[in-house]
Length: 209
Ligand code: PRP
Ligand code: URA
Image 1 (cartoon, rainbow, N blue to C red):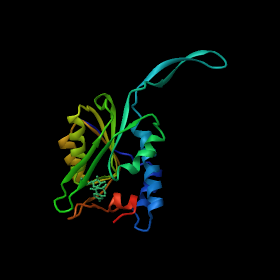
Image 2: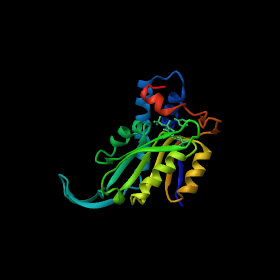
Image 3: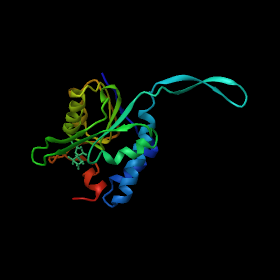
Image 4: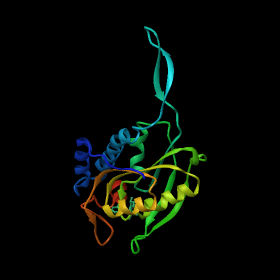
């Protein structure tokens, strides 16, 4: 069974409170989403494997640790997931980036896939799927279905705000994956928006409506 973790560091909670507010404009929203993603990146990379390396300090030879160079991929769910990529890349700059394009049909709330572009060896990579919002869970479930169909086995899902309904649906559909969220909100409203949430993450990031 995968784990479920709320990463509620005080800096993250403070920044989340800023982006939840209607008065926060696109520029600040975009900057802060990346800052939160970077802070979460610190936590989600906690279990990356290390290996021994022999080095020379000015004083002596010694064996120390370095990242084992396990292959990573960050996979944003378009559009809003793009907002989290640079923050994570600032910590893990060598990661490859794949894209899965998906939108929610506003009537049915069902996700529709429109693009999949992934590193060739995605089946061998540790994958971080990123999307600021986990609402009904439909988009995350379909994106992970899509990755698994292409051989991916090692997947973590990282979001900023989640609804209990989406967490449950994702855990039921993909019990093997670890889920990280900065906040677990109260519920979904009748339009599938997270309450209290932050509104439409894609529109707020890109200044669309
Ligand atoms: C939003 C969000 C998630 C999805 C979450 O995307 O970025 O991908 O909704 O909802 P769900 O859990 O109910 O599937 P949206 O469909 O608004 O597309 P966008 O990112 O292009 O704005
Ligand atoms: N997608 C969003 O962008 N916001 C929500 O609250 C739910 C889905």
